[in-house]
Every structure is written in structure tokens, then in C-alpha cells.
Length: 218
Image (cartoon, rainbow, N blue to C red; front, side):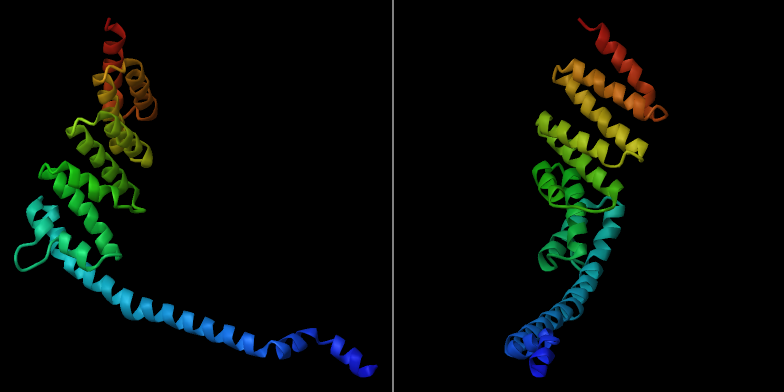
């Protein structure tokens, strides 16, 4: 009886004893997974991030001076963003390269490629993301796809409302396209929204002019 009572007091030890092989196998798998993750991060991914950032460095300098072709293709000695995206896919630098590519393609009037790369780009930097959305809107506008353009202008205008200049500008572009498409009532509401949210911005000051013009149109 005393032996039975002793066993009842240690069910966990009995469980370990009875399942020792399974628990050992589970522990081994966990160790292998942790080691594999550490090895991938430290020995593979981090060195790739460093190399990708180095490869992007010159392209960033060309981007700053609006040399779009050099940004995309490099200068013969240094690689451009197209190389960075292909060679270092999945890195932070490759993601940023999509932004540089999208903006550069827009500046070279290749609007479809601009849309392609910018829609595949994302960042937690709200100002940059808002500009990316806005440039997609600009590209759709150039392609005469006004509904798509308006959608992205609205996204750009709403993404970082604390930045008055950017937000009011893209909302204004949305309102202008609504007006162009004959959607006067929607345009008026958009202009009113700009005036209410960004009264001190340039577009906020101009809103009444466009509201009054639309109201007096037959």
C-alpha cells in the first residue's frame, strides 16, 4: 500500500518514464529547429542583408540626384536596383529597391512597371508608404485609369494624416479626378474634407474656390 501511495504522488515522473523515447525525440527536434533557425539567421540571412545594403548604396546615391536609368541598371561598375532585387530577394534592401525601381520607372514614363514594383513594396515608414501609394495613383492617372488612380490617391491621403502636405495633396488629386469624371458631388465632399482636415495647407486654402466653382456649374 505504501508503494502505491508513493507512485500516486509522482504522476509526472511516471509519465516521463513511460514516454522517455517520445520526449527525447521531441527535445532533439526542438534543438535542431532552434539551431537551424539560428544558423539561417546568423550565418545566411544577416550576411545577405549586409551584402544587399552594400549593393544598394550607389543606386541610392543616383536616386537622390534623379538618375533613373543608373538607379535601375547601374553604371557599369556598380549594380542597380534590378540586380539587388534579383540577387538578394527577401532582404530589406531588396524591398527598398522595389520602391526605388517604382519611382524611377514612373520618371521614365514606364507606368505599368512603376505600378508593378510599388504595389509589391511595403514599409512601416508611413511617409514613404504614402508616397508609394500616391505614385501608383499618378501612374494609373497617366494610363487614364481614373478609378484606380482615385483609389490609390485616397489610400495615400489617408495613410499618414499627420503629414498635412502629402495627405492634402493626394486627396486633392483624387477630388480633381472625380471632378474630371463628372462626379461633382463626390468631388465637393472631397474638397470639403480637405478643408476640414487640413485648413492650413495650400490645398486647404484652395478648397473653397473649387467647391464654389462646382456649386455654380449647371
